Structures are given as structure tokens and as C-alpha cells.
Length: 440
Ligand code: SDX
Image (cartoon, rainbow, N blue to C red):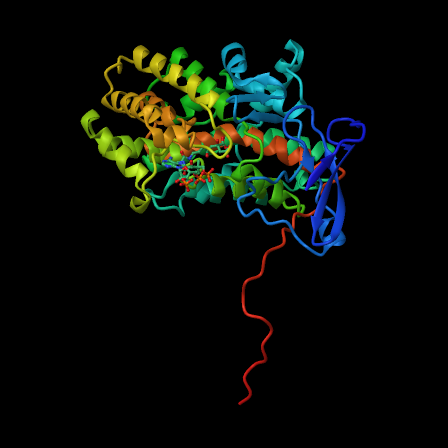
């Protein structure tokens, strides 16, 4: 295939006048090239089948853009992450999670008035229908909280018939606000149910993250004071996890939404996908891995195991499909981890020592250098969340609480994209050719 630059033109996302020429045998086909604001151009293969009778083949979507988006951009080589153009470290340092929710949903940072109105709207949607509590009695107490989240968030779709006409902009907005507001409440209920404590209602006098902490850790028998250092740290952790381009769970939400499915059910599909240890489940898997390593002097043994393909073992919290440099979120996460451990007097946490040694050895090792494997966001988040007091089973639930705004912002963008249609990938068939049913 060769590029032929005529005179590049067109606004971001539209076809430029550059073309790609595909040669198959003695046939040549012209393909449009589209240019974004930043990042790689794309070769538009939308008409490839019509033109050539052939599909593209890209099982893990390693080279495939499935949409245009203006929400989040990752430069994997530089290790840069932008939310609506703002670098993640600047957002983590200078604002709060709810303002980032506004930014991801509406494209601009809120003015003071916009923030106050948005916070009031979200606050007023944090309660769930009282009948939701009945769903919990059907779960085993020891059910994994992600199983509870998939079931309970999916059940929200049985309550809100006034926000399921996705062609109505106002209903899309109400559904988005409800999802962002109710996710922490449901997550806290899943935690309380697992430890046999009563559900704690949301409090409208607290900010988003402080409210979540009190719903998780307060008990009716005594007042609960939110630790501002913990609340600020968790709020920053939510910002880091809020969105991340077209990752597996976001692509799941987009595909589910492309059929016009109920938005709450689409978010439930995202939760299901996030649960996997290769994706959002890695924070839980990374902490369990550090526990399994057990001591600093066993780190070399596990690094060797991770390099041995036949072991099937991978360092959880290491590597990334897009980042071939340090995950910028992991740097902020590491800083937050040290702050929390210092503030809570866990500076000598043995798991932190193991994590620091594991990172030191891996970053010097040829295998990891050659494969560009760096710590990702999940490497330090587990230690931090454990120090705050969350059980390891709840880590991915916390990831889902934060990622809800990303899922819903991407879902809204997909619904509002005039180019969007139901997603329907094709395949390379390798099964048996037509054959007749055997005669008697
Ligand atoms: C998240 O997509 C997103 O944006 C996800 C996420 C988000 O915010 O939504 O960032 C959140 O999911 C972060 C990733 C969390 N997962 C883990 O930490 C699990 C451990 N990591 C790996 O399983 C892996 O790195 C993935 C799944 C994250 C990335 O998978 P890829 O891009 O398909 O990488 P790969 O499997 O092709 O690996 C490339 C090579 C392979 O070796 P070769 O076949 O080339 O010889 O690197 C090796 C892999 O064996 N490798 C690892 C490794 N990760 C990749 N070897 C040891 N330990 C690892 N962790």
C-alpha cells in the first residue's frame, strides 16, 4: 500500500485529500485517509468489502479505530493521557473528580456556576429506588462484588423508563446523571452487603467522594468523620480511572449501545468486561500477586517466571496495549500511594517494598525493556486502596465507579454521532465448507 499526498485538507476526522492505494494482484484500490487533531491518521476501510470483496483482519483491534472521538487521547509512546485536551497529571493536581465528570460529559471545564448546578443535580440523584435493596438478598454474602455490580446496575434498567428513549437528548442527559450519581451508592451497598452491615444512605452535605467513603465506612451506631487526606487521594484516584479511549470495557459499552439498548444495561455490560484480570481486574490481581511474592528476596524468582512463556504467569499491573512508556496515571498513582501510606503511618508496608523492588528489577531487565513493559495504573492502586481500608475484592468495583463517567460520555458521543450504526464485525471463516446432511 502506498500513500499519495495530493494536498492534505479537511477538518479533523473528515477525509483529507491524501489517499492510500491498495494493490491486490493486478488490481489497485483507492482508500480515503482521515486525519485527526493529533495522533495517527486512519485509512478508511468502510467500503473495502464493497470495493474488493475482502475484509480487514485485526482480532485484537491493535490497528483498528472503531470510531471518531473527541473525549480522550493517549500518546502511548510519550506516555501522555489527555481528557478533552487537558493532561491527566494537571487535572489530578488542580481539580476534582466531579469537575472532570463535567469536562468528559460536556467538553469544557465547568465555570463555578456550572459546577454548582452540576453538583446539585448529581447530589439529588445519589439515592436509589428503595426496592433496589431487595435485589441484594438474592446474592450470597460471599459473592464477588463485581458480580453484584453487574446484576444490580443491570437491574436499574427496570426502574427508569423515563430515560430509555435514547433518541431524546434530555433523557440521555438524565440517564447520564443518574448513572454517575448512583454508581457509588450501589458500590457502597455491595460492600456493606458483603460484610453484613446495614446500607448507609447518601448524604447531600458531602462532596461526591466523601459521600462514597461515608456510605462505605459509616455505621448507624456512631458519627463518621471523613478523613480529608483519604477523600482527596480517592478523588484523585477516580480522576485517573475516569476514561481511557476505546479500551475493552468502553468498546463493549459502545457496541451494546449501538443496538439502541437501555443505557443502564449498556453500563452493566461494561462492568462485566472490566472485571477481567487482563483489564480492570488487574488491580485486584496485582495486589494478590504482591501477597504471593511475599518478600523482597523472592522478587527475582517471579520476574524470571514472568519471562518464561511456558509458566503462563504475567506480572499483574505491568504492560499495556497502548502505553509503550510509563503509564502517566501510574506516576500519579505512585505519588498518591506514598502520600496515603505516609499519612496513615503505613510507610513500612511490606507490599510497597515488594512493589518498589519489583518495579526496579523489571525496569532494568532486557525482557521488559525490549517488550516496553512498564507499570500501569493497576500496579500501585491496589496498595493504596488497601491502605485506605478497602478489601481487595472491592478494587475493581472502585475502578467501575470512576470509569462510569467515561463509559457514559463515550456512549452519549456514539449515540450523537451521525455516522454511528449498529456495530457488526465480520470474520475470517475457517470452518467446514457446505456439506449435506447425511442420508438415512
Ligand atoms: C487496564 O486498554 C486500556 O486502556 C486498559 C486500561 C484502562 O484504563 O481502561 O488501561 C486498564 O486494563 C490496564 C492493564 C491491566 N492489565 C494488567 O496489568 C494485566 C497484565 N498485563 C498484560 O496481560 C498485558 O500487558 C495487557 C493485557 C495489559 C496488554 O496486552 P497486549 O497489548 O495484548 O500485550 P501482549 O499480550 O501482546 O504482550 C506483548 C508481549 C507478549 O510477549 P510476546 O508474545 O511478544 O513474546 O509482552 C508480554 C507478552 O507475553 N507481556 C508480558 C506482560 N504483558 C505483556 N509479560 C509479562 N508480564 C506482563 N504483564
